[in-house]
Image 1: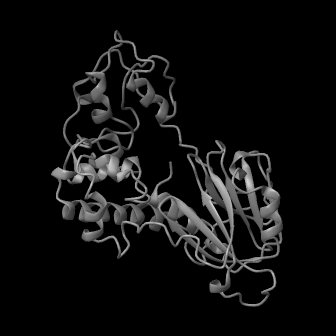
Image 2 (image 1 turned 180 degrees about the horizontal axis):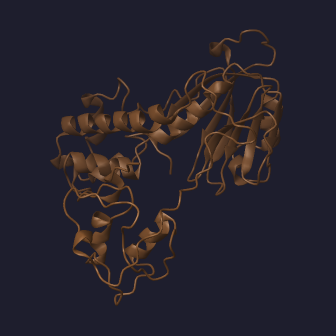
Image 3 (image 1 turned 120 degrees about the horizontal axis):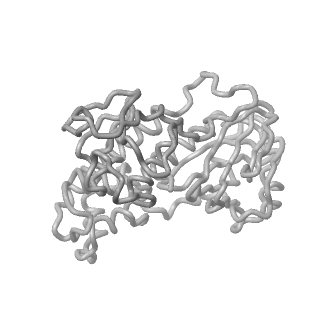
Length: 340
C-alpha cells in the first residue's frame, strides 16, 4: 500500500492542475472506488469548478474546489467542495494530455483545457469521496509525524495505557503514526535498533520520536522530492501519461555455468559484474526473466532442493542475492541500493 512518501508524490503529480477549471469528468460508475459517494454526484458537483488546493495527510489525499459561482481568482479559503482520495493497494494518480483516452482501469478522470488528471486503480481498493462543507474536513485527524504537534508529550499520552503494545503495532496504527506503513516501520525498528515485537514500555520514547521523524524526512526526500515533476518542466509526451506505467525492465541474460566459480562467492561489499552474473541454473527461469520472478524462485515457491546454486541456505538468498547492478550487503533486500 502506498505510504506517506508515495502519497505525497501522488499529490504532486496532480499539482499542475491547480488553478485549472474542470470542463468534463469521466468515471466508471460501477467500480468499487465510488462505494462512499456515487459517481454521478461527483460529476454534477465538480463540473465547471476550479481546483484550488491539494493536501496529503498520512495515506489520504484532499483536493479542494472552488464553487462554480466563483469565476475569477477563486479564494482557497472559500472552497466548499473537497475530494478525498485513498489509493488503496494499487491506486495511482497520473497526469496526461487533455485528450487522454480512458483505459480499463482509469476509473476517474478530471479534464481541463490543458491536461487530464487521471485516477487509475486496477484492484479497486481505493476510495473517492466527496465532502461538501465550508469547514476543513480534516480538523479531527491526528497530527502527522513531521507536524509540530507531534511532540514527546503527545507520544507519551498515546502510549500511557499501551505499555504492552509492540513497537511495530504502534507504528502501523494510523491514529498514532499517520502514513507509516510496513517498510517504514521496519526501517524505524532497524534504526532504533529493536525487534518489532518489543513492548513499547521498554523503549525510549524520545529516541522513537527522533528516529521516526528521520525516516519520514528521508522517505519524502528520496521518493517525493526526487521524483515529483519540476515546475515548468515538460512532463507530458504525446499520447503517454506521466509518470509512465510501472514495468520493471528485464535484466540481461545470466551466464549459465555447470559449476560455481570462486569469483561468484559472496563477500561483504562485493559488487557482481553485469552482465554475466547470478545463479547458473534455476528451475523455471528463462534468460531475461523479470527480477521479481527470480526472487520468487529464490524464496522457494518453485525451488527444487536438488538444484545446485552458489547460495545456501535458501532463506539467506534475500541477503546474499547477486543481481546486475546491485551492491550486495548483509542488510535486508529492501535496503540494497540500486545503482545504474
